[in-house]
Length: 59
Image (tube, rainbow, N blue to C red; front, top):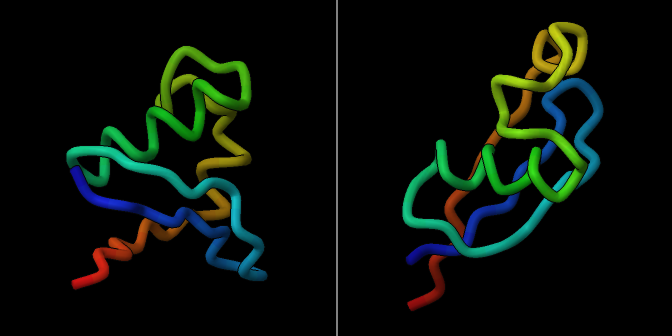
């Protein structure tokens, strides 16, 4: 598992930070915590604004 931090691309607020095996799983986990089924279930407007998932592995 890796630690991911998901931010909005347009203005940079952190939307979610947590562990996930990969980027897509991290996006799905963020969406579930916000009450959605998965990342694909987010509205087109939210997804169109863009998100950035950064792996924060610390050695």
